[in-house]
Length: 126
Length: 128
Image (cartoon, rainbow over all chains, first blue to last red; front, side, top):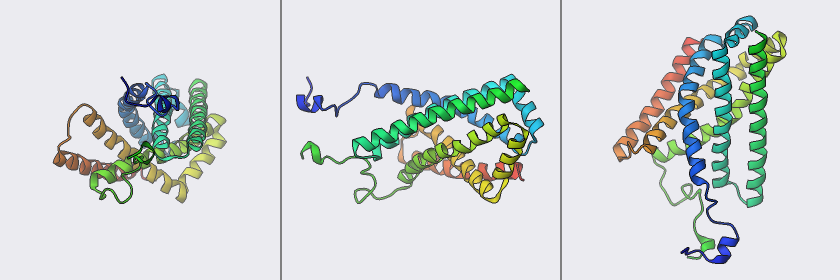
């Protein structure tokens, strides 16, 4: 039996029943990002000053291109989950929170899509 | 206390709690996370420039190599390493380890120093 009043439940201020999924995918993406980010940082040390041909050759390796795509997809998903929690904690009123969340998630999705296509274009042209 | 008056997050900020090392590191984790989201714009700009061709790539390298670009990249490096190190600290907590106060303080300082030292190390190795 719930101790919430029926009115409070109808107003929708309770659990949405998917908190565990949100928490879990945040952890799964974190665990994936540990090795991916370490790889990315070490890679940047070698390609940060590379000229175009060197960079294109570097990204032309399918394993590196694949890791870049995985890094980007995981990063933007992780970022979306993280920004959601920040907005839920700090942004009021409800309408502002909703708009901020929607705009951020759409932008992150687009940035992820564009950056992945960019990586593929360089990788496949090499 | 009525439901309307219950304290809402961020109640950690304000007169209710004295700032502590652990709480400062916690809010820094969020701040670096949000900062890194903004930082992804640089990454996307760099990759899209590379996809548009050699001219755009060289231009992006020049922009990112400017004083302002390098300063932002330096801050981005630290934010990334801090968020990475503190993220690992969080994963240990999720697995049930390191909750004792002195352990949380020790791992906190380890995060602070490792993020600073690794940032400097990265910039020494990739010196412009």
